[in-house]
Length: 456
Ligand SMILES: Cc1cc2nc3c(=O)[nH]c(=O)nc-3n(C[C@H](O)[C@H](O)[C@H](O)COP(=O)(O)OP(=O)(O)OC[C@H]3O[C@@H](n4cnc5c(N)ncnc54)[C@H](O)[C@@H]3O)c2cc1C
Image (cartoon, rainbow, N blue to C red; front, side, top):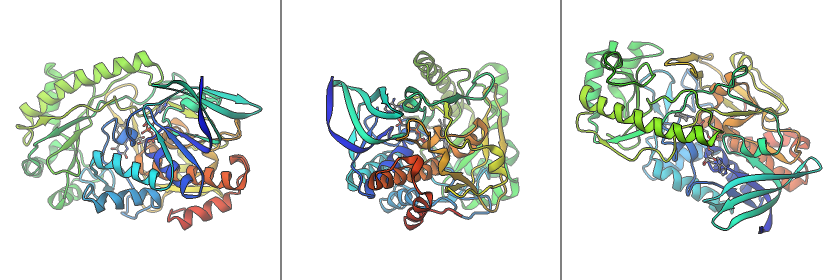
């Protein structure tokens, strides 16, 4: 087996938004950083799985609660015309959403890591983890060079599925307790040449055919001035199509979002139930089922939905969208009650305000618990610290949270904010020669505040 020549301060495994931001944050604090990613680009769910828009940087009252490096990503996208920034959510599910161009997202994340001095390694998958004396001593990576060992002082698991943690023996909960069922997967579908104005007129004329989570009046007001559309509905036609067997998708409505490019939409509607994202055979069948459902959905849109008549189907996402898999058990397991009560922690490292949003593992529904519209809930640093191995942190959607709390903090802006904190923690540990469990979280919080994060 070959060795990666250099021993890095930090190896980040997984280049989704959380890992990309973590790598940037660690490198900005002077750490030598290697970011390993199995795809040939960064962004994870937002690029490989076709997810969008980012939802949400704001609380229900419209106050921005996620800042710091995640906001810098938005600023950079806006500077190159690849995002309209934070705009009102016309579904009213959130106060604001943030559409973006996925190709630009790949470039912006990449630029940020490289500018900070980080090293990228694409086309590379984590194969195994070596541990000794309560520490990770190396990662076995699999790529065109065969098996290669990478060594570092500190490791960050940002694989979304906690691949690194699970192989290092860290306990985890797969999906929900009891039956391990996870939120369904969705193969996102991107379509172009959609007539947004025609959709807007249809919704204004048929508002009862759409869901407005927090009030139809607010939704219609927002719709009239919206720069991009977010909508859930076409209830009548969808219900009829499900009853007649024209579509067999276990979902209660069509959910769709306009991207940064007017007339290009993400259709987040397919629903693959009962699959385990950590089982490669299940994952493969989920790809097949997701594409099959998208054939039905695309035909349905063109036939029944005003504005979609001339839609053109783009490539499907490179992989099926995985909402949920393993939840690591770290020093603190974040709970839904702590989110609802907006509990503040001495080691709060970021805030969020997205609702507890659980796509049912059992059927067509989405169960939502809205948190208080003002204020924001907190994520503690201890939910990123696994304890043993001592030199391992976890960021992004697989952090230490119950499956319910995960339903809220899984979304992109919060995943990035968690990545910011985890990367900064690793950078500070590398600088101070300590392990994440021993890091002074006063220092971490000070550093995050200096870097523009919002903690209170
Ligand atoms: C269908 C769907 C719809 C969603 N809708 C929204 C939405 O509208 N708005 C929103 O904000 N959020 C949404 N989310 C949630 C959000 O996109 C993700 O939870 C968030 O982006 C997670 O980021 P992450 O970096 O933690 O993980 P991921 O994005 O999953 O990134 C993990 C990265 O690690 C890499 N990786 C994994 N395993 C390995 C390995 N063994 N070796 C090497 N690399 C590896 C992957 O390729 C990937 O790049 C949605 C998610 C899904 C699936």
